[in-house]
Image 1 (cartoon, one colour):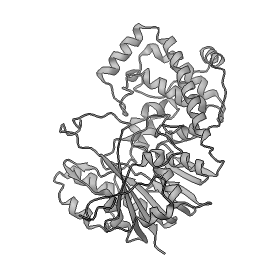
Image 2: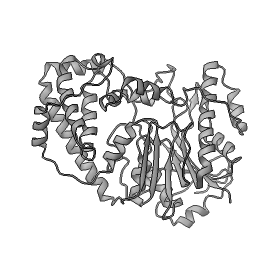
Image 3: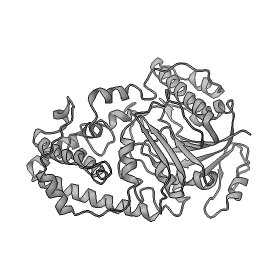
Image 4: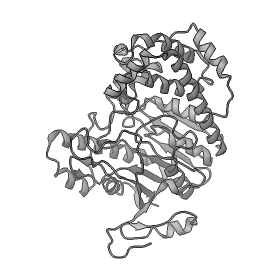
Length: 432
């Protein structure tokens, strides 16, 4: 229903069962904002966790319906899709369903593991034989991690190192059925609180390990590994019911988007950049990365490149909103963080956008610095419209659930939690 009382209010529109032309015709309103619940917009994807869209707890990831909505309404056959902040890899995993070639980049190497697991064909496995092979394997893998004994009881190391030794000995095209299940079980058998997506020793996780040590924990380890593999089998089967296509794709990991150029043109950029006060994703997945075989120096180097915590060259920003809200930030370190964030993401979109021929679709949350709401979407729009882009529409999606731990009190500020409740999908069209 159109609300004519105030141009500042959102226009509510039901996208279900509407023709594409009707959707497009609804976009010509004064503020170019439309409220939508993406999770209800794609009937063929019945839930946000369907298929392999949630086989690993990754923070702040796309729900698949957002990507599907973009592809169904803006993409045409033969187009190539690109995500420079791919994270979980949802853009690629969904692109296969609709038959689009794609290219994914991310700083975090875990992208490759999640993606290659998520796109697997259906597979059969003899679980009894597998567990026996792991138990009797002579292959041993111990991470090159100076803090290993801080995060794992010494008693668990022998079983974990044997399971990971077996996993690392498997051929490249076979090992993915085991990696995500093993990651999930390894996290549970660590002092890290697996309910929180960061490397964090909590009261709960200490009690968890104490209770495991008093039990037949080795039996529980293998039972849990079996269950995780069975769960993955089901999720892979669900994904293959969506009839994903064999398309051309490229995955690039360890990529610093600030220092990397797109070689070839792409048609649509679909991405969600890091949040303004994002947690450190590399640190959050450090435990997983060590067991996957990455060393301490490599992981430290990746951490130094994370946005918005890295140094970055200043750029000229073409946005009144940027300067307006910058003046409201009093604390120097927060002003530096604010500047680094926008210098980084706007430079990336400005430069990568030169190789994007049709649309840039950017999914962001209106985050706060202390109590100040920052209109990230409007700042991005104002800047990029100076570089050959036209703002077509912004979809406002209500966040129904979160991957990360939620509390009423923000642990950083010790104040009532006022973290992001909506996310905005900006649609920018290349000016002709």
